[in-house]
Length: 109
View 1 (cartoon, one colour):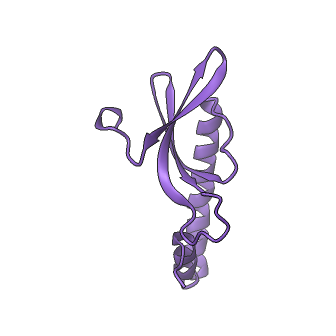
View 2: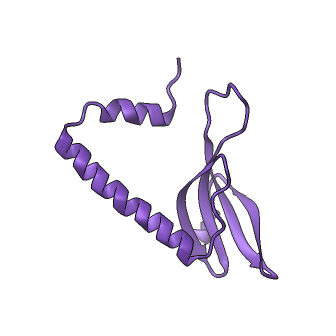
View 3: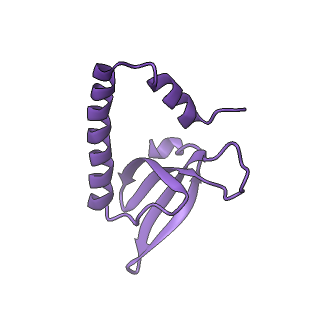
């Protein structure tokens, strides 16, 4: 049985002591707060169902979000896929998204 990256992390964390886990908990709280505040600040649409935001950045009027994506296949052993970059921008008040790719082009880094 092939483990997902998440399951591998869980197995690793099971070996940590309570002090290490508390440090991780503090870091996770800060990281979650950063991502949520950045999402609000940039007026991004919520993350679509079956996706997980990994990172967010902005260049001019376009917001780029790195997302892990579930394919929807019932027995997929490699979900989530990616992460992949998506761009979001407003056109006439409506948020439009577009696929960028597995990596941001060098001009956007």
